[in-house]
Image 1 (tube, rainbow, N blue to C red):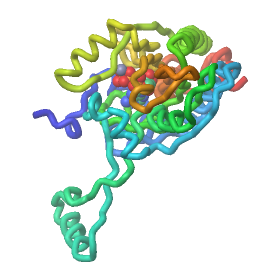
Image 2 (tube, rainbow, N blue to C red; image 1 turned 90 degrees about the vertical axis):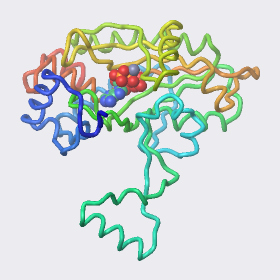
Image 3 (spheres, rainbow, N blue to C red; image 1 turned 120 degrees about the vertical axis):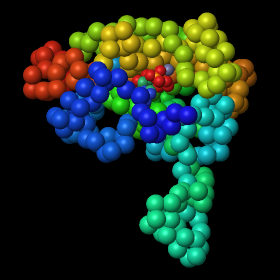
Length: 312
Ligand code: ATP
Ligand code: ZN
């Protein structure tokens, strides 16, 4: 059986780009696929892009909120993530033993035995998408105002998908706008970001296309969910070629959840109906990598129009 943690997937073009990024010190190897350090320049570009997103969304006056890269295990269980994506989840376990257990632990580490099997699950899991900690917070505030609500989020997210594709990390940052309201309100929000997202990315001089997409739902039941998601047009992605033109990378995504989270968390509209939600997600590392790919690894040589757009 293929052990994902030992047999990373990644083709030659992906590996070439990854190695070029390592050679330039833009990404820093940690010995684990998908887990990298970032250079100051990389962070600078990423933060400028993040600020550009803020600028393009400013008129909407979203409520900003920041959560740490981990969330309540209980919230995570209720969210239904394990039903759809058990393969991607990351849980936090800790040592909870006594002195005797401590001795055993150290012996196992010293002899190279598995020391992790007695670790116990904590109340914390790693955040899989920036919006997951938000929904119970919305619900707790009571029914939505007539105009609904709009939030601005950003978080490091974890997904267990080790890969030598530099654009598929295990820990990466996702910027999101999340809209809750009536079906009309959330669909209008998604529509406007489909337009704004393209305008924003075009201003940065990268080639792009929009396509219908699906989430990586797990297993046999997942196949049906993927097909259903596509048929109903629930997910769109803005794709940019990074290591392949045939298979461009999803850098922004535009998701309509229907009333899934409204049902799950008991979020109500002003007139007592189940709320609908939608989110737009910006993969901050992916966009940054796309910029390095298309404008070169040497930031000093980027086109003026692009640096002007980012640094103003
Ligand atoms: P993919 O289809 O490539 O697995 P996704 O559609 O599952 O990505 P979403 O769940 O929509 O991704 O996440 C929102 C955004 O986060 C994506 O548009 C992408 O830019 C970014 N993202 C998702 N997974 C990763 C990853 N493993 N590494 C870096 N960025 C990611
Ligand atoms: Zn996807």
